[in-house]
Amino acid sequence: MAHIQLEGVEVDIEVGIDPHEHGRIQRLVIDVEVGFDDKKTRIPDSPEGLKEGFNYATIRECISGATQTKNYLLETIANRIADSVLAIPDALSCSVKVSKRRCWPDVALTSIKISRQS
Image (cartoon, rainbow, N blue to C red; front, side, top):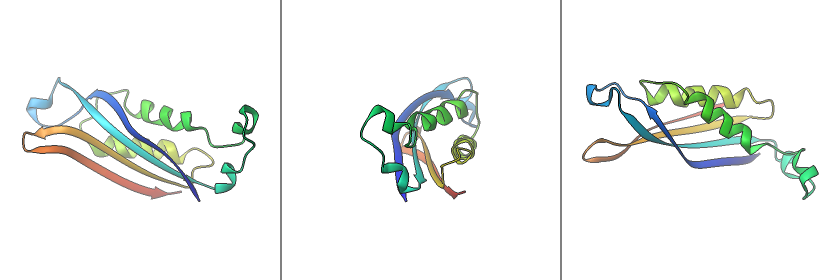
């Protein structure tokens, strides 16, 4: 199995359940890892060969689609991304970590990480 990782994708979105978070845009940091058959990595080193591989941009589109609307929970965002990624025909597994900064003054990051297989 091979893995593609998109790390540190930053998204500004309204998220959170605490009253001080309502109506406030927060920056999320999202990491996604997608497992697929490593045969998809044995492609010609060319633009044409890339068409036979796994399209990284598709993963970015999954993140974008899952973060277009207000959400209350990081868990909701992580699950939406994972559902979308695992709907890609070649995706065999998916791990998603969604973090937000400074939910509390003494906590640098609050995160949820989920992992699934198709």
